[in-house]
Image 1 (spheres, one colour):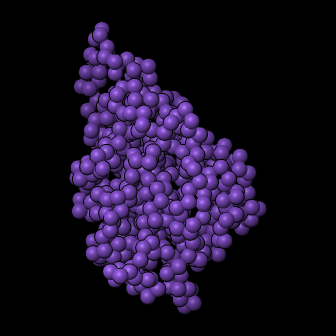
Image 2 (image 1 turned 180 degrees about the vertical axis):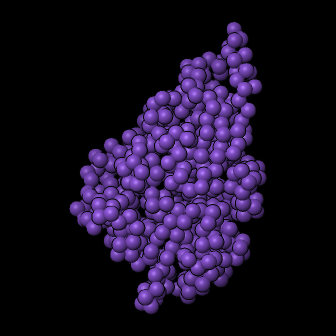
Image 3 (image 1 turned 30 degrees about the vertical axis):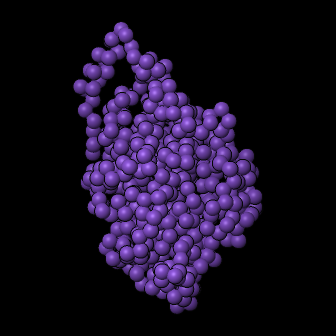
Length: 460
């Protein structure tokens, strides 16, 4: 657990308020209002994409906002969500699907909101050495003798078919039922003709394995490599550093990154309860301000700060993996098969491409995947998707935070979307591994494009 010293800083803050000649910055902050709650505890999971929290803490961006923060690693995503709901945590690093799933009542029901997207990309799919050797028979190679990327699930399908013919289950791991990892793994498998299974919550079946060719189940991120090594699962989808850890341990091969499945996909968000956001609006804005600054620091000057970030994240109180392992992806490269390291400069994006803005279209994509795989049991009109997105995603809070940073001279207007014209929807996105275009304004039309998955009035 990390804690910033509060009492001395509060004395300094009180003294500065007493000064009759206020600086321009203090005047701007007074417009937002002083934080209703100064001492905060935020949770995270030991993954590299918790970096905006670590950097906002280490660079004292939270303190600049009059906030005195504890950062505390959590055992798993369920514990983390439960502790935000019951108030033990003020907020947390969350899977993008968690606020949405909770708000619509899939799993634990509670109204969670997010005003800050923590990153783009950052995940990978890894298979065991044995599965990799079986896949390689089907993968084309380039002139350099190395596998041609991206590696599609088409090359895994003969392996899965063989296991099924022999009556053996093909087990794979993902981190949580409403995780990006679950939906990315399902997307990749389905694009290769491998059915990842359906959920049927209306029948009390939340296994997600109905009609499945590959059986997906939950494994906490840090336990993925050991579970793979034990042979309990044959592959997994997880964030870093747990794909690169498999390479370093010599137990598995990352075959594809989520950047190659859906270029610049949203990954984690910072979530708080709706009740907390309503009770502490100024505090919420100030938290977002600090994290925006941290995200910019992580990406600025063409990732020049990433080596320092790697050193910070490698500490046991944060991710706790070897710096060498974390650097393999955080510094713009990614190692697939041992020795096959390739340039992937946008594997981790924290600020570029307006990564921190909470787009409604991002929220709606997750909801379409919940519907596609049966977590949403019945057909919903397009208006329902929009309504849920607006309940959960809070670009209004983000805009206030961003405009304050601009007024204070800490950021430029060009760092952000044009708030006067921004409607919360990205232009139709085309860079998916299966070539399907996603338009967030037409969720039901989007679902109709898939051969595998629920659509229309389909129900399990």
